[in-house]
Amino acid sequence: MKDEATTLTQTETQDLLRRFAAPLGDYASTSPARKDGAAFMVRTLWQATIAGPEMEEETWKAFREIGGVPEEDLKAIQDCYYQKMKPVVNENQLIALRRRYRLKRRQT
Image (cartoon, rainbow, N blue to C red):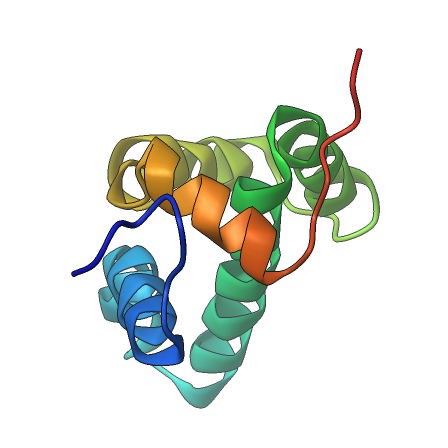
């Protein structure tokens, strides 16, 4: 792979997304409804990962308040995200993804 901080190809980005999504594979494989739910969670968590901690917090809030995800389930999703999904993407890849999607983080 070339200098990840500079750019990621479409193929590299898709591969990274597949690796990011892999921890939800077993959950998704049990039914079509779970597959759709897992796909939604992957897209949402992928966007939150790229956008940063503020978006992660908003995502958890939306899952809880809008999605009605019970606290116990939310904790399991958070554990999977922080322990298995998010670590797949390193800092250089995050920079490249933010460039790819033209995302600028808000300065605090």
